Amino acid sequence: MRQGTKVLPEHARGHNRSLLLQTLFHQGAMSRADLSRETGLTRVTISDLIAELISDGFVAEIGMREASGPGKPAMLVDLDRAGHRIVGIDLSGSDVIIGAVLTLDGDVVVRSEVALPSADAVVDTVIELARTLVADSHAPVLGVGVGTPGVVDDRGVILAAPNFGWVGFDLEGSLQEALGLSVLVANDANAAVLAEYTFGGSGADVLLVKVGRGVGSGLLSGGQPMRGAHFAAGEIGHVTVGTDGGPACVCGKIGCLEAWLSVPALTARLDAAETDAAREGVLRDAGERLGIALAPVVGALDVSEIVLSGPPELLDGPLAEQAVETLRARTLAQFHDGVRVRMTEQGQDIVLRGAAVMVLSGQLGVS
Image 1: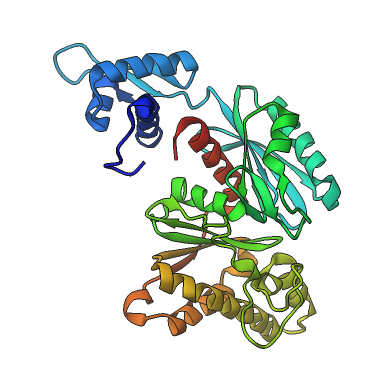
Image 2 (image 1 turned 135 degrees about the vertical axis):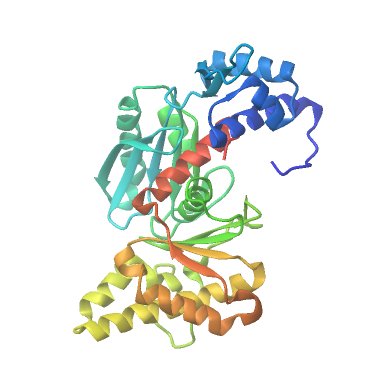
C-alpha cells in the first residue's frame, strides 16, 4: 500500500498484519524491536501481531540474535518460509502446461509438465495437474495461482481467450470448486510482470512483453498493476502492426502483432527461411513490428524499462535490437532514448513465480 494512504479503523489490523509480513518478506529475520522501528507500529501491536501470526503458522521464532553488548540478546522472528507452499500453473506455453510447487520465496521445489490438450480438455487437465501438485507439496498449500492467456477480470473470469475459445468463462470459480482451495487466476503477462517486480529487481515503471503461444504485456506504473477499464490493459497481441497486411490471426483480423511474433508463428517463418540472412531478416521484421506496437505505449506512459519474456533464441539478439531501433525512431529522443530493453533472467519460471506473488498478495498482503 502506498505510503500515506489512510487506513480505515476496521481495516487497521489487516493493514498492520500485511505491513509486518511485507517487512519480513523483503528484509528477513528481525527482532520485535526492529520491526517496531521499521514499521512505525508500537511494540505492543507488534507483539500481538507476532503472536497471532505464529499461531497461524506464518511467522516463526528462529533463535536469539548474537549478543553484541550488554543486555539480553533479542529473539529473532521471520516469515516461516517452509511452513506453507504455493501451487502455480502456467497456461501460456505453446505446447505444454507447466505446474509447480513453490516456496513463499518463489523457489520451485516440484515441477511437472503435461502436453497441452485440445481446448475442451484444458480445464480437466489443469485440475488433475493441480491435485497432483497439492499431493506433492508436503506442507499446507496457501493457494493456487494460474496465469493464462486472454483478458481476465478481477474475479478470474476469462472475458476472452481466443487461443482456448473461452468467452466469459469463470476459470477461477471452476478450479476453486473442484480443488477446494483458494484459487487466483490472472492474465499470464500480468502475472509475469509481478514476478519481475518482486523477484527480478525491475523498476516500478516497467512493461513486460510475454511471448509464447500468444503475445501480451503486463504493465506496472509506480509499482501498481495497470489493468484498464475493461481489464484489457497490455493486450498488445491483437494490435495491428503496419499497413501492409500480414498473416491471419486467430482472432480473425489480419496482421496482428501476435500473428507475427508468437512462438508458433515466428518459428514457422524461421523454418521456411533458407539462409542465415533470411532468418535474421525474419527476426528483425518481427522486432520492428514489436517496436511499432510498443512506441505509443512508451510515449504515453513514459516507462523506463521493457522486459522480454520468452524463448531467448528467438527474442534475444536481432529481434530485440531491431525493437530498440524502432522504438528510438518512433519516440521522443530527449526522453525515451534511455529506455532499456532486456530479457528476463527468470526463464520459463516467470509465470509460475508470478502466480506465487498473486497468492502471496491475495492471502498475506505481500508483494
